[in-house]
Image (cartoon, rainbow, N blue to C red; front, top):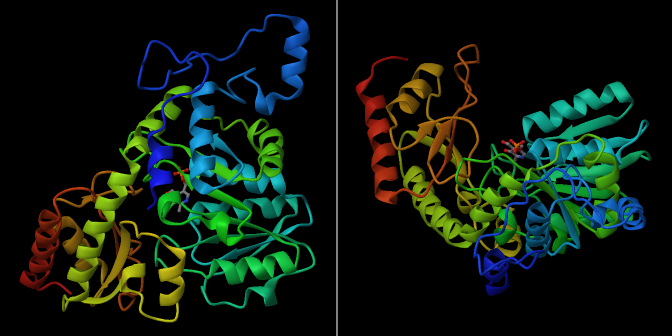
Length: 386
Ligand code: PLP
């Protein structure tokens, strides 16, 4: 993590109406912005992406957050949305047209793939390559318009070589999009590795307090303008000023929180790796395979979302383990201050499958997290259930 990024996270408000020394950004709780003359109104409305006209499009509080996100990702511009899915929907719905093909690489967030399924109805085809080492070039078609990746994916945390991937995409004239929610721009900067567009769920680490849902897209000014007029304005998943203020509050402490998430996560990974009940741990810190060099060159830190495989991962054993946890609370989402646990294992699954359990390692005292896991392993060993 570098000092420039720390500065960007804590920069003072420099937008309109800087006010009498208020250190928190003003919340522009207004739906529209009245203009001094009709001529000014017409001129500003004609370039609505860079003027404050109507808050479904632009708003000063939201714009301040967009500026910070663009700076952190080293992009030219950013656009915020009401959710991560709002951002992803605006990218896919705004940039693709009937007859296009999208290539998804790695284990991509489920609803993103469901959206791709939905887009088939509008003539947009797609292919999903879940293996991180799949031969991407072999699957690029003449009509491939986008390669969409997550690195790491957020279930198995497998990492892609972004430079190798973007070199292929550029040679073949295909735009690349990456969901960078896992790393945050503090730990990985995909645009500097040649990716064209980055999307975020701000709901996770950047918001950080589990009290706001939001999303963002970062890229070149030209592409963000294209997304603004098609995917943002027309689909209408706008972020409100109040939500932007909450995300900005999260951004202030993002560097210190990410350092703590990393410290705790590495301790949890090491602890799990040493446990006889654990078959495998999925986190870049535990990845000593062919991706290890890419991991050390591509990341400046590692976040706190990881998964592991419980030996004999039947639904009964996974439930017993998860139910015995107290510090790790059962729930969806991740990246907040609090530790969370979930699992894709279902009662109707093959009982011989891997007992995958996902942990979002929060900011609590790390020893309480390790003790909590040990307590759950003990609950397993006390049980005689299959
Ligand atoms: N991307 C990833 C990797 C996610 O995990 C999520 C949500 O869990 C999203 C995108 C969607 O974000 P949101 O829930 O803010 O719509």
